[in-house]
Length: 536
Image 1: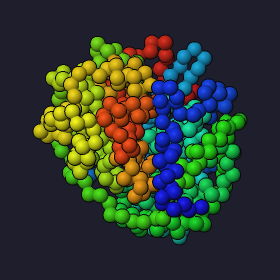
Image 2 (image 1 turned 135 degrees about the vertical axis):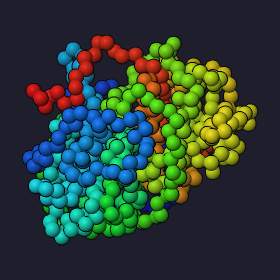
Image 3 (image 1 turned 120 degrees about the horizontal axis):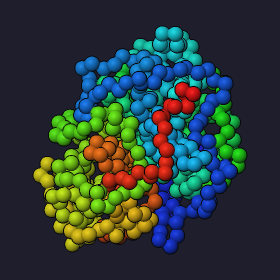
Image 4 (image 1 turned 30 degrees about the horizontal axis):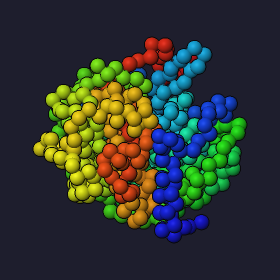
C-alpha cells in the first residue's frame, strides 16, 4: 500500500526519534538475551543445487594502494572463479573464534553484534558448464545455491551485457532479536559496510561496480520470488538494492527495465527457519514500508572526481588488510595513537572524490564527521569536523555553537578545528559509556543532513545509513593498514551528541559512531582459519 510522501516522512522521522537512546532510557528491546531463539547466522535454501566455489590458495600480493587504485587496464574476466574471489574477499568468512565450548564465525564484512542480517544474491550469465541463473551466496560453505535457472529469452540480454547483478537483502529479525526497535538502523549500517566490502573486492579484480539508483524494493522482491515465499513469522527478508558489476551496459534505466520485466522466473526452494520463536516490532514494519522506493525512476548518476594519488603506504597487502579486519573490543590507551600524516590520509580516503568505494554510490554526500581527537601526534586534542560536502559548510557552521573556531587545519582537506581540549570523558559518555570511545586515538560521530533530505525523499533514510557504512568500511581498512583497529558503535546517546555540537532540532542527526585505536587481543580466545570446517 502506497503512502503519500508527507505521511512517509512523518513515520520515518517518528521512528528515528522513538529509537533514540538516552542516559535514562534506551530504545526498546527485549531487555535480555533470549539465547534459545538466537537466529541461525547462515541462510540456507534447503535442497537447492549447489555451485561449488574455489577458495583462494594464495593471495595475489597486491599492494595496499590497489584498494583504491582503479585497475581498469587489465580487469579479470568474469567467470565462476573470479566471482568466487570477489565473494571470498567481501561476504566470506575471515576466521573462527572459540571460547570454551562456544565457537562462532567472523566475516570479512562487519556487522552489528556479529549478527549479519545482510544476504547476497547474484544474477549470473551463462558460464561454461553453468547456465545463467539466480543464486544465493552461502558464506559458511562458500557456495552458490541455485535458486532458479533463466531460460534462453531471459538470459539473452544478460549474456550480451557481459556483466552480472548483485542484490543485497536484509533479514531484520537477526538484528531485532538482540537490539529490538533500533534494529532497522543497524541493518542499514551493515548494508553500507557490505556495499563497501563488495566494492573493494571488485576493485581488486579490476571491475567497476554501480549501485542502481531508485529501483523499487517491490520490483527486487518480485524478481527474487520473495512475494511468493511463505516466511516463518518474523523472518521476512526484504530486498534493499541492486548493484551492477562491469559489463557493456551501465545504463540504469536499461538494467532496471530488464530486472522489472523478469516476472516469470520459477523458484522452488525455501529458506531455512532461523529461530523457534519471534518477537514482532510493529514500528520496524512501519518504517520499512515508509522508507521504500515506490516508483522506479532513473536519475543521472552522480559524476565523481578522479581519485588522488596515494601518499601513504602500508606493510600489509591489500588482501591482507581485508582479511585481518576485525572489530576491536578493547584498546590500550597508552598505545592508542597515530601520527598526523596517517590520520589526515585516513580522513582523505573518506571523501567522496577519492574514488573507491564512493564511486559506486549515486547519491550526493550527506554525511560529515565530528571527530574527537584524543592522541594524534602533531595535532591538538579536541573536537574537529570533516566536511565531506562543501555545500553544507555554512549550514553546519551556522547551526553549531557560535563559539566554535572553524579554523581549517590542513589546506588540502576540508578539516576544521572546533574546540581544543580533552574530550575523552565526553566521547565515552555519549557512546553509552563504552570505554573504547575514550581510550582510542580518536572517535567520531557521523552527522547526516536529515530533515531537508527526508522531507524531499523519505526513501533516503536507509541510504543515509548506507553512506555511514561506506565511510566506516574505509575507516576499518585504513586502521588495519596502520596496524590499528577500529570498531563501529551503534549504541550512543543521539541528542547528547547534538548538544555537544550545539545542534537543535533535527536538521542534522548523528547516525553512527566510530572509534580507532590500538587493540588488545583477548588471549582467552582461540582463533581458527575461516574454512577449517570444510577441510575436516
